[in-house]
Image 1 (cartoon, rainbow, N blue to C red):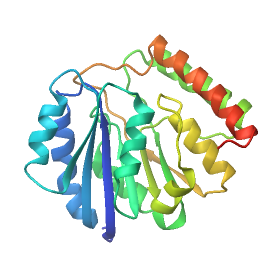
Image 2: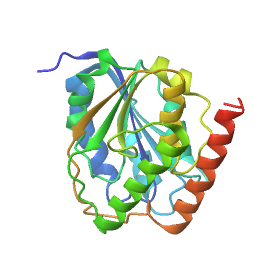
Image 3: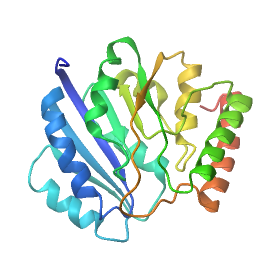
Length: 239
């Protein structure tokens, strides 16, 4: 049984996840109580057009450890992560995606490595996405792209289950990418800052409710543009 950590900030980015948000948050609460003496759960609503914000407001009203940050309009996955990092109060910060494809109880696997690393990143032991071939192709193209541009390699760069120390986040800030290249920016900056990164396997589950949007054409085009801007900034001293 893992020893409780003193403090843990948990956040979930949500965009049009009315079908998932309540279960994701309510499933995380008993885990938070089990693994941390002090904890908070931050729900980042990234400009949802459905009832996500309404449900988040109702949840936040039940416990002052449940907090809502809301964007209007929708800004992107990277912006949601940045808001989560910015509003987190405690010394360890963890996030998972809000689509129900991860079991938050597996945060114990990340916490076990947190005293030996600045950042602990999950990798999906077996991906369970719809349109799996397309997803795997994009994942491997991203690995090649990041290796060429930023000279790093990880098993699963964009896995949405990661843990950070507050000091690591402070060294990574400010984060510029507002779209899908946020993870590349985080890892590229971490490499430059010589932060210690550990990888740990996590279980990935099929999305049962809601709709995936991460592999659509506008997201991919935005990611390519953001990665080129990031490369320029890193090489010419602007970040």
